[in-house]
Structures are given as C-alpha cells and as structure tokens.
Amino acid sequence: MKKLLSHPDLHCILASVEADAFALMMLIVIFFSIGMVALLLLLMRYKARQRDPHVDALIEELNLDASVQKNASEEKNSATKNATAAWEKDPDWWKSKDS
Image 1 (spheres, rainbow, N blue to C red):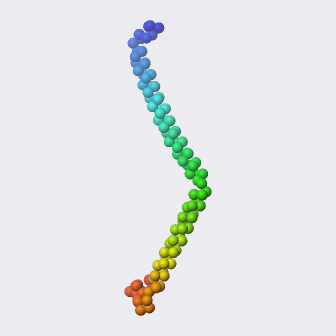
Image 2: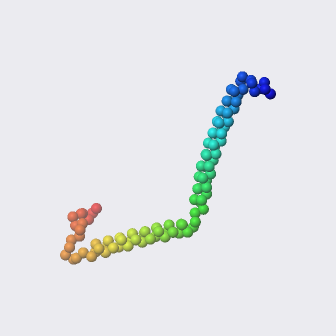
Image 3: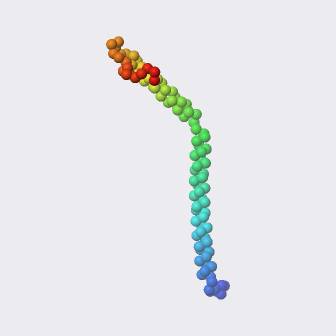
C-alpha cells in the first residue's frame, strides 16, 4: 500500500480526478438549472390554460362597459352638434359636401 501512495504519477491522477469531478458537478448544476427553468415555463403554461371562467366574464363585462361609454359619448357629441341655433352655420361649412 505504501508503494501505491508513493507512485510518482499519483499526484497527476488525483489532480485529473479532481478536475473531472469539478467539471461533472458544473454540468450537473447547469442541467439542473435548465430543468428548473423548463419546469417553471411548463407550470406557467398549465396555469394559463386553467384560467378561471370568472376572469373571462369580467373581461367581457369590461368590454361591454367600454362600448356603452363610447356610444354614450358619441350620442352626446351628436346632440351637441344638433343643438346649434338656427341662425348659426354648420361648423364645417367650408368643406365640400362631396368628400
């Protein structure tokens, strides 16, 4: 046993094993990190598919409210336009009626 430990190439072999172990551990850490990112992305995709139906109903309600407000503002603008006095000219009198 003593002869084995005193072999001249033993230090080179041990240094090579240590370097290989370091490289192997780095590869393990890298692949573990990539796996965690992939798992997070898959979980996000899974959760996005299982969206609560109440969220869709709320989004639809917001869209309806926005369209109602838009129609109300258009009606208000048209009512203001039609509320001009009889002696006033149309504000766009200078524009041609053809275009």
